Image 1 (cartoon, one colour):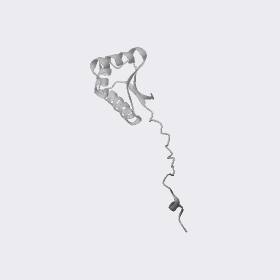
Image 2 (image 1 turned 45 degrees about the horizontal axis):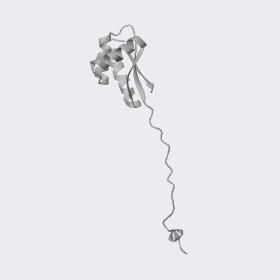
Image 3 (image 1 turned 90 degrees about the horizontal axis):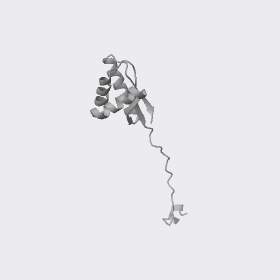
Image 4 (image 1 turned 90 degrees about the vertical axis):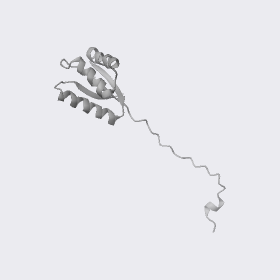
Amino acid sequence: MPHSHDHDDGNLLLDTARPKVKPPKRYQVVLLNDDFTPMDFVVEVLVQFFGMDEAKANVVMLAVHHEGKGICGVYSREVAEMKVNQVNRYSRQHQYPLMCQLEVA
């Protein structure tokens, strides 16, 4: 008795199911304003942890100061969480209440 594939003419169409993959969410790392952290410390954090030059760091620092928060960058969740933790730890080590958090971009 012949197997079914013996009669296959090779033109069978297989429709491969493609999973609908959403791009991973992006998270923005945000610094929040407070009344105690000096502006130059905020600039130092932006340069050290976010690779900004002095001019860009000053623009973000002024946004933090005048608007209550400033966006430091947009990253994957893992990178954003790491940066938030680094900045918050660094701020505490220097006895400043500067708060860094992540938000869905």
